[in-house]
Image: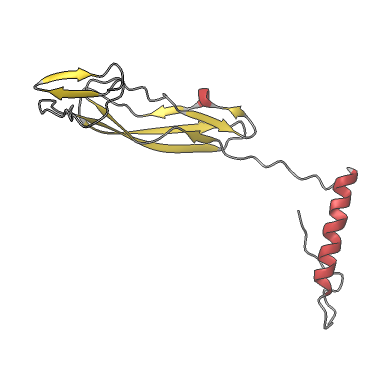
Length: 156
């Protein structure tokens, strides 16, 4: 905290005595704070931080958990993930864009809100061959070859 004051407020001097007095007052305040005689700085409360709230695309029929990967932390209160409130619904059986609102409040009443769009899409048809004999496939990669679906069990 810095208070501005001047011992020479009404005097007409060429020099600005208020600036040097401001410095002296700041130093006196620091001394009071160091000695424990006053100068108590009130604690600063920071708003909670929501993480893991990114827009996402899912296919019809897939499961979706609105809280998967989502966390809330607060400098003063620590982990607030269990205090997150999610407003809105996602129906993974119907294609469309769904809005979810995530809200968390800390112990001092500071609130953080974030919006997330979940897009539910039709699954693409997998009738076209996409096998490339020149490509290296890793474990779990899926290709269509002559109408049959193949999943690599190791790199090829």
